[in-house]
View 1: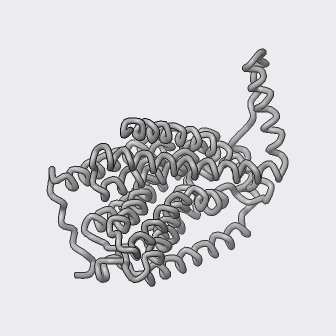
View 2: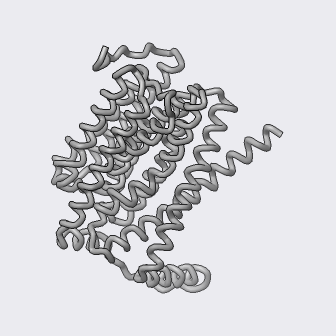
Amino acid sequence: MDALIAIGWILAVIVGFVLLVKGADFFVDGAAGIAAKLKVSSFIIGLTIVALGTSAPEAAVSVIGGVKAAMGNSEAASVIMGNVLGSNMINILLILGIASLIAKIPVQKSSRYFELPFLIAVSFIFILLGDIGNSFAWYDGLILIVLYLAFMAYTIIMAMRTQPAMLEADIAAVQPQEKPVRQGFLGFIDRAGERYEALKEKVWFLIVITIVGLGMVVLGAQLVVDGATYIAQDLFGIPTSIVALTVVAFGTSLPELVTSVSAARKGDMGIATGNIIGSNIANLLLIAGLGFVSSGGAGVPFDISSLADGYMSIIAAVALLCFSFVKGNNLGKAAGVTFLVLLVAYYTYRICAALGICPMIEIPALFA
């Protein structure tokens, strides 16, 4: 029976990946199409709608973790921290690392001078709030949510000021190419693709594929997270904190991974970068905030490992900001390799420290 359950979860993970890949295609197509119809830069769409949509798995994990923490489950509280901080590291170091190896990823001027510095600033605020009392109270969550609402207000104002030139640049990034006429089943696939492209001119269809794509992405991520968590914990006995930082964080970041890589492959760089930056800001302020508020009076502990993860997420954001000012403000292969090396090195250290192979480095707290 146990073997059948394990096989079932493995199949669930495979199905989850399929849903993620195809759902991300629909989601990117719908979001980019809506951006064009509304005459709004796809970067703004990526920073808001796509970022919030792909952050849905993180939100679900954090809220559920907060509710369980309020009911006395301390292990669930640790999942919130690993989920949020792990996702932010993976978003930059893994996702942008892979995407920048596929193609040059431009970083918008507003990202270099506002969104990324804002992300770094709120990361420090996050650590400050956690350091006070070595835990997050429900009202800390409210502070973070208010900061997120202020950020969204700024984003909406900037969207209203979007220059037509930016929109034209986004649209020009993807140019249709002629394909040879094929027969048989391949010809049927080509005709279906042409019909799909024609329907993308209709607003109602763009809305449908955006919603369907988001549903597929979220469901796929949930299947992957649940299946991978079962395999890691029940079959191999990996500590919960490491599962949260790796399996859960990676699983809930899969929507961002597939969406951004798909966007990079399609040439829609606005969504590729805006999605990651917007998701990281949403993770720290909205997603974590919801989890802390949901924990009620129990709160969420902030220990030395969480402090290390917090500083590493800041290092990742600073590295992204630095690389955004070189090579014509594009993330290239050098950035991609650097991001991936940082990720592998830090995760190796954290896993070894958690398993007792090496000591956990004592990082001085901002508040004693």
